[in-house]
Length: 71
Image 1 (cartoon, one colour):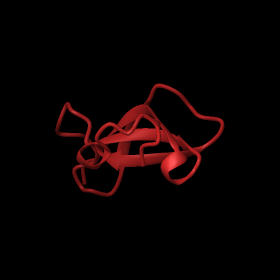
Image 2 (cartoon, helix red, strand yellow; image 1 turned 135 degrees about the vertical axis):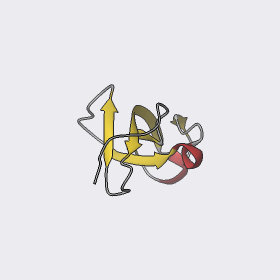
Image 3 (cartoon, helix red, strand yellow; image 1 turned 90 degrees about the horizontal axis):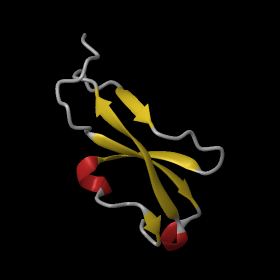
């Protein structure tokens, strides 16, 4: 099975999220491309967080998730 990507646009955005609920702060830190077999991702990160949690969301579901108050 191939793990290469077939598109140049990322299929997912990568965020670091600090806080919970409507007070959570989402900061986009990278992009991910789903493998053609659907079993994994290649990721490019612009930052590596020391705190918070890493969340990977599809581009369609992510919308614009950066900033306080977005969930």
